[in-house]
Image (tube, rainbow, N blue to C red):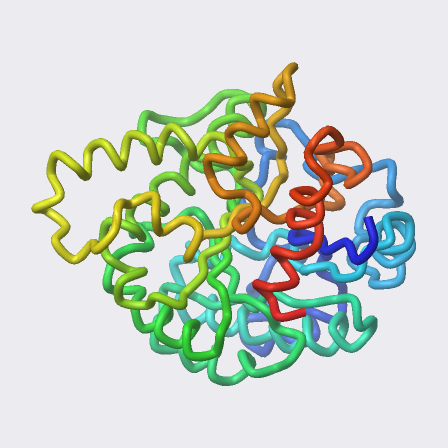
Amino acid sequence: MTGLIDADVHQGLNPAFWERLELPWRKMAVPGGFSWPAHALGHNGTRQDIGPPGSDGDPAVLVRDLLEPHGTRYAILTGSKVLGINVHPNSLFAMAFARAYNDWLIETWLGYDPRFRGSMLIAPQDIAGSVKEVERVGKHPGIVQILISGSSPLLYGKRYFWPLYEAAEAHNLPIAIHPLGLMPTGSGWMSTYLEHHTMLLTRDFMNHLVSLICEGVFEQFPKLKVVLIEGGVAAYVPLLWRLDKNWKAVRAEVPWLKRTPSEYIPTNIRFTTQPIEEPEDEGLLLELYHELDAFHTVMYSSDWPHWDFDSPAAILRDFPEDLRRRIFVENARELYSL
């Protein structure tokens, strides 16, 4: 597939980042990043077969091991072990971390290879500070979206976040939501990585998706795009069936919605493929993709260098070629103005 665009590539932190983090926060930080990853369940999320641990913090390694073998035209960088700052109790630290990360991303990665595009961090604990950060770096040509965690004390439809969405819309920057890592469910903690990987990656996204639609975010900000990264695709279809049905019964609760809830998907929501669902009959997956208007809403992502990396040569092989072209190239090219 020529012109391949990978919408989720995790570049690791390297020593240059920690030098960017200002004092006194540098002395308080834990080298390696901030997340609650699946390591707590005894599972390593990175691929050890692609190089020594930490090699994904080297731009040259990413070019050698991902971009060149797959002919990747653009890689959308989404960081590694950084989203824990979104739920950090100290908003001053979180904001300092975000600023340092964005400067490091621009200098170390976006300046290294024109195929790299960046996802800027913000600290939702401080919405005013986050808006200032969007104003500071959002105009950089290599920054293509604002990255936030799927874990949040508030659902993302809440009006608290609306100043951020206003700034994002003004700068034509999508809001990208990515899973954070090991977090409790509403019914308690999981015991295994299998449970985590099956439930967490989609669960938070379902909550935020319904909230964003029902709270009227896309009526207030009609040009805003929200990208659900690393949550798969197929699970949202029955959720939207249920949401549309319930809306017809209790639509008086949300009089600001001018359309059926699912109608906001093609105009405002984008999904990434990884971790792709793999039914025995790929035709079933194709039907679900059609339900979500995948021709306009789904983008390829590899999740490199994680263990469940999805090779572009291995997935969606039986899909129609025009749909494959939209998923692997055109939808991301249009969203990110590449």
